Length: 249
Image (cartoon, rainbow, N blue to C red; front, side, top):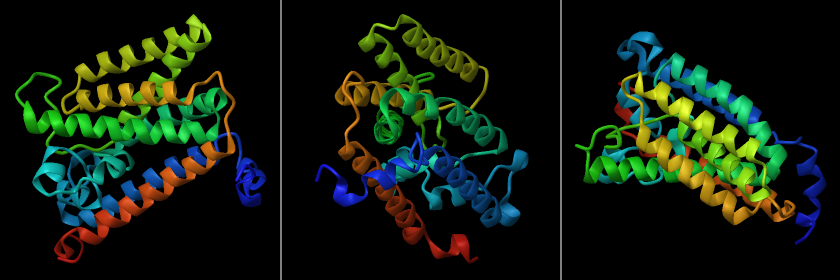
């Protein structure tokens, strides 16, 4: 239906980014606060939630996916964070990049790129962590969380937009940001470089399929809403299938 059954104008009134930035920032903060609350005495230093609680809420990686069969966590892990600095820097990058990608691609396509990048990122790190965990740097993760896979996907979309439209400035900006974040990540332990790489590839591939030279269509907005709805279902599935003792000891 070209007009999305009359809801098209209402969706566009949600703003340039379809309200996504407020949703993802608010959602990640709420889930982080919930993970701290549920951790109770298991709370780690630097306001780091208990690992079992993160696993229950939807952490991804080789162990949750291949060990526990929680395949849907490739959708949920990007909404969880391991400590206060982790969520602080990721929220800053989301606030900077999401509106820019929405300007270039449109709100619906930005949400699609963000979701696909997260799926690619967490799938790659889970597979690497299961198959070749001994590889340095890109050996994947046994358990992983964070929005950075999707953030690298936004950078991948930025690079593709620059190359597709002939704007070397935009492409170089995306590459420089990605390299800067990668170098910074090498200075810290626990950074999931495989998820970053997968996210970048996923964002770039999604932007190729969506083609920034073509205008955004109303079905892109609808598909963006589907991405958010499926992610919500995945978060609920993580909570429902977790062992009750984790929440009610």
